[in-house]
Amino acid sequence: MKHSVINMYLIKEFLVSTMNIILIFIAGGLIMNLREEITYFADYDVGIMLPIALSFMIVPSILINIFPFIIFLSSMWILIKLKNNNEILSLKTFGFSSGKFVALFSMTAFFIGIIILLALSPVTSLMVKYYEDVKGGYDLDKSHLASITNNGVWVKEKIGSKVNFIKSKKIEGDFLLDVSIYKLNEENILLERIEAKKANIIDTTWIVEDGFKIISGKNVSSQKFETLIFESTFNKVKLNSIYSNLDTLPFYKIITEIDDLVKKGYNIKLLEEKKHYYLSLPFFLVLMVCLASIFSLDSNDKKQNIYYILLSIITCVIIFYFKNFSMALGATERIPLVISVWSPIIILTLFCSVGIIQINEK
Image (tube, rainbow, N blue to C red; front, side):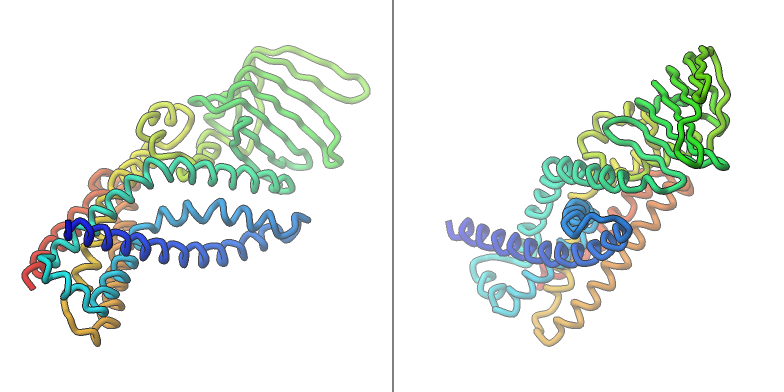
């Protein structure tokens, strides 16, 4: 019973510490992102509420990507707090070793990771999707624009003195399906309209199939066609690059619908990388707790806290750079993709195992 009460107390303190760090990062993220949004909408009469709303939409997704660092800082916070209050020494009289502290906080961090994947990921993905859709609607003054929304694929491009507006239901393989193309002159007067079932976009020279073309002017004319050549500045590769932001996809969708996502145009390598990143997240959170414990519990000297905090933060930054570098090697096929994601986890596991054994003996 005593251990149960103590466990609940420690878990509560850990969660409070984590929430405090999250609130600090939310405040910092909102301040930095709000400045960017205000700059972005400087030429639009939208007021201040839209930039604030969009900042709230994008910050949670950013927090998930840096959550291992948040867990690391919250672990450092609670462990140093317990050590400075001599609670660790007191709890050790109840049979709590350093290893038990690490195990308790690690299990809590692991379950937080599971909650992020199953509950928060679907919410943040919708928020990022909304964020991109709203911002995309204010890009219409740009000469070249492509966006993918719930209403389909939208493209605007300027070729010479003419502007093309293109709408399609979706991308499927090498084709745009249910295509509508509007050609306008410099005065935004409609010159030509093309409607077709599909268009081959493997190159910038599109082959538009099975449709009709309407030429506007004094003498309006219409003609059907089986194939039509259409010159564009976009091709399949360029349009598929729109799918590069995988934060718009929740974890469960990447796991269960990866084949369908590839057919829609998503890059299989990026999807695999994101899938393994999500799968490794709970384990990475556990390792961040272990790393914080190694630095925090290695010494009982309160005067060395600042030294260990600075050293641990530098170590954590190095780990993040190493992890990103490893994933970049996997994305460029220098090493297998799975190894690029999991090798930092394995290396960090070996390091933390030795460190945990040492602090548990003290």
